[in-house]
Image (cartoon, rainbow, N blue to C red; front, side, top):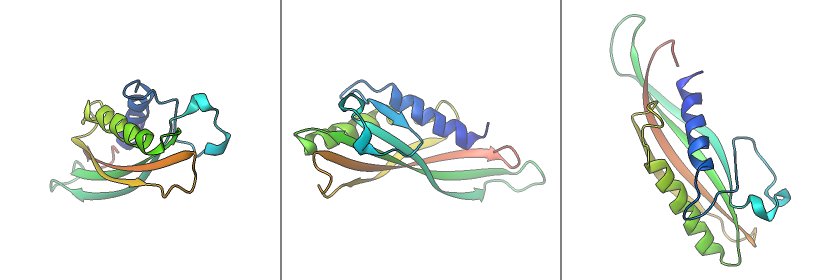
Length: 144
């Protein structure tokens, strides 16, 4: 399995384990229709691998070390009468969970939340948040 896939799998496993300050009910990497979720599946989280920047970190022959910085978009849906509070709680839960191991199980050098986008309220009583996360990692060319 590639380092990219190991990192994505670690993010999924990390978020599936979240119980405080909210119990995340559903975590997946496959797109879903949030309107079809049961109340028990909220908050629901979709993890999508985004863009990646790569560059050489050493010079050499076939064993060149490279650095990659991947952006993951963590799309969160909450359902509550207090939408703003629920959105804030899911942001806190995701960030605290990801901060508990910034190395993503030893596959990454660092993990950082870089942006948080909040929906405009048009999907009420469901609220949406997109948390963009950058993960920096190193790999040997040919072994990604």
